Amino acid sequence: MAAMQLKTGEFEEFRTLVYQTSGINLGDGKESLVTSRIGKRMQALGVGDFRSYLDCLRDGSNGDEMVHMLDAISTNVTSFFREPEHFDFVRETVMDWTRKRQKRFRFWSAASSSGEEPYTLAMTLSECGLNSETDTRILATDLSTRILASAREGVYAQSKLAGLPAGYAAKYFSPLRGSSPAASEVKRSLRDMIVFQRMNLAFPPFPMKGPLDIILVRNVMIYFDNDVRRKLIGDCYRLLKPGGYLLVGHAESLTGLVKEFKCIRPSIYMKPVA
Image 1 (spheres, rainbow, N blue to C red):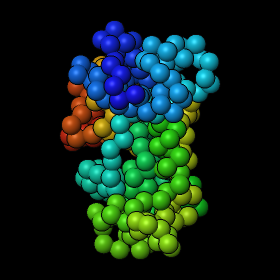
Image 2: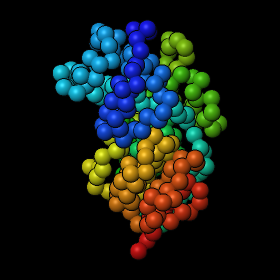
Image 3: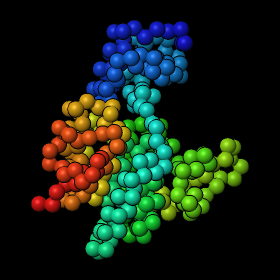
Image 4: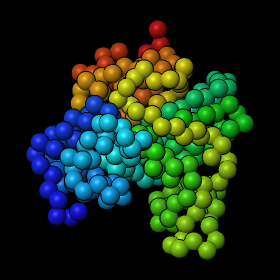
């Protein structure tokens, strides 16, 4: 398997297929990434060449293989309290809403990866006095079924907890006895706030009814072209309540995508109140 070569034409076919099914734009020079990640799937299936695997994907003869292929291609890099200024903003905003007697809260972590982002959001909301008993819900979605399964499990290596604020590890995680390496499990109080669901961000409109208070679409648009970005952000605008917020990655911008949003500060946008 290691000696197999991905031909230029085959790479272009994979690139087109991935874009059509997920909106992910594999740039030039990604041949080695595709070879490595898809090669593992082929090895698991006993498929001997890339052409046969492409045929398998297209004819649907192997059930959910398209989902497994997208799982393999997807990149999942995240951490607890990544870009912490966003969670400071969430805390300040939610505290203001609670002072104004808001009782219902809805949040969407659109590219939740292995769960660090929605669990961080849940910790932040808990510190504001919210929980599953206060009509607070977080929808956490991702393209990858594999990574969603890991997120639902809520088990993290102890090293992953090193960057948490003081006291949070003890408050929100329970050590798993006998685990090697050392690991901890997210406590039920956070789990009950979150619903994990597979969702393909490339194909709005999304099934939620809204209105949502805050949507996090962070560090995922870098994989999309402007057409996919525009449709994604447009549906986020539809789903948000007037006065609700969209948070994107610090390296991302809505410039030229959806003019209706008002930029509050870099990477934070508000749906204006009519």
